[in-house]
Amino acid sequence: MENIGQLFSQISKKLVFDINKKLKEFDLTISQLKVIVVLKEANKNICQKDLSERLNIKSSSLIDSLKILERKDLIRRTPSLENAKYTMVELTDKGRSILSVTNLGKDHTEEMICRTLGFRNTEEMILKFQEVLTNLETHQYYE
Image (tube, rainbow, N blue to C red):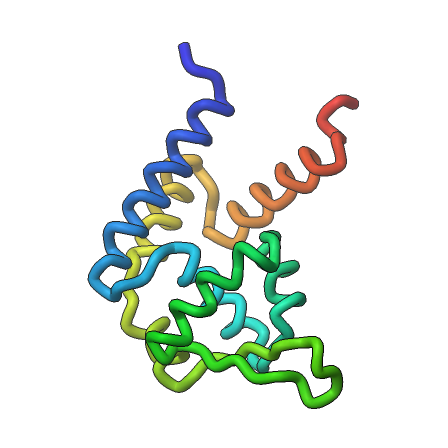
């Protein structure tokens, strides 16, 4: 019998695989999509350092994705006016519009998981998953 950690890992891998498969149509990867989503949520240009922190990845790992997104005209990078050592990143109009045309079936997937696990709605499910993650991060599961 598999344990819950293995099942979570398999579910995660399957979700990432399916998303990457759908993103091929837009010539994007899930890593690039995450950058676009974080920039859209920020609703302003943010410095590259803050972006890497929000994505929880090293700045050096982020640079390749940013170069590719810039070549595709989905983002724009400019030196910061306040501090020359910082690079600001913002979505272009094309970058903003890509989120409206990339229907990845997120709503259907969330609804299926919600229904399967018996949650009343996706908001309740997300809150519970966030609570699990917080408990794991703070080691509250030992109590």
